[in-house]
Amino acid sequence: MKKITVTSIILLASMLYLAPITVIAKEHANPELLLAKVYKQNGDIEQYWVSEKYDGVRAYWDGQRFLSRQGNEYIAPKWFTEGFPDRPLDGELWIARNTFEQLISTVKKDDPIDAEWEAVRFEVFELPDAVGTFSDRILAIESLIEPIDNKYIRSARQYRLNSHAALMAKLDEVVASGSEGLMLHHQDASYKTGRSSALLKVKKYADAEARVIKHLPGKGKYLGMLGALLVEMPDGTRFRIGSGLSNEERQNPPVIGSEVTYKFYGKTKRGKPRFASFLRVRENES
Image 1 (tube, one colour):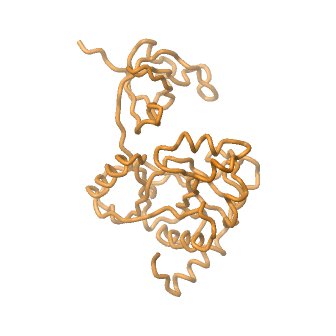
Image 2 (cartoon, rainbow, N blue to C red):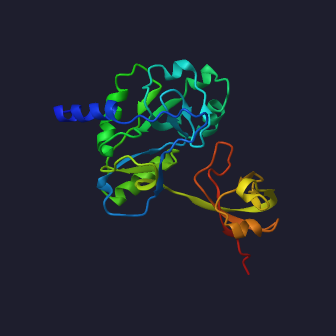
Image 3 (cartoon, one colour):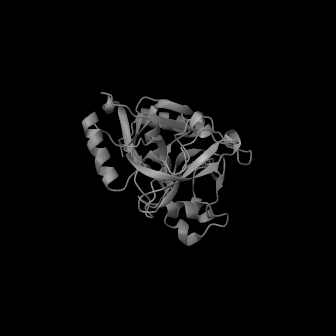
């Protein structure tokens, strides 16, 4: 914990109590969140705070409940949120690395199961609508959460790296340990919602091939077009690819039986590619 001066205390007080507080009153209203862009190599890594990219679910605490990016409520047991601040917090509901399926099963139940929620933690990484820079908000988050006598809420660990090479080495380390990747948040960024270069996601992906076995119809804006490809890996594992496809490819999808190349970010415990995204139809070798 950094030493807090009198000036810092005054700043923190204004951030914690005088800044506007947005409480979502409408049922299932979509919270406005800060969204990340993809990291591209640059030389000012020392200007960013680094944290783990948790493979959990993004959760907005509106002072009373957890909401997903789409405005759906995650119903937690009352004891889980005991002592939580009555102001908005942005973070991730998370269990541990490589436990995404367990987490989803836990948080999507309308009747929460106490024994399952015991494993969950709320990792807080932003303080919506607070004044000051992100470095200021880190101090504010720590000061807000530290006095709470509840082990289920924590401030996400933020640290520094001094170069792109150090960032890539750290990325290799955390990915090898089962992490999804890293996040970079610019130290001087004020709080703004929407997609921003002040927040960057640093991920690695692999690519592989799979055979198309079925076209799944689209819904909503993709009604009348392809919604997703059902594909099969060489070992017989089947999964869907619904992202990365252009409108033209959705109107004229890869033919059944063809092979496609997709990218993914590690695999689930069941061996299915995580966050699979279409890249291209694989050309037959002559």
